[in-house]
Length: 178
Image (cartoon, rainbow, N blue to C red; front, side, top):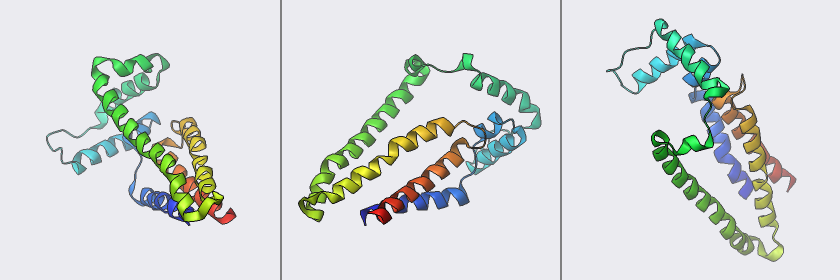
């Protein structure tokens, strides 16, 4: 039953992404779909009520093309040491704090879960086995996401959609097998 409840957030997020999430301007520009990228940037500007900024026009395509070439050219790619330069240090520290907090919660659950499963399922440990089995899907999902996120046709929206769908299906399949 725990596995069914674990699948529900993934499936709700999946449905929400299908109906409400659009592709990012970065993806459109990286895919040389400049008109769609410009349209999305302008929609974002209006949605966020930044009326003090001008709309991006077709004449700005040259700037977008230059940005695309610099962003996706290997000689302009960032390195690990670039995380600690002056312009990036604040974000690096903030994201590290967030990462630590989320991992503290996640691994805290792993430490507390055996006690909870022992009380719910007794000493047989089957509940803990189910919990550990569901965790095995995460490393595989991370590897798949890293491999496909910047590939043509996937991008961030589709990668997230597929991840949520596969996660939900994985939980349901574990539940039906167990």
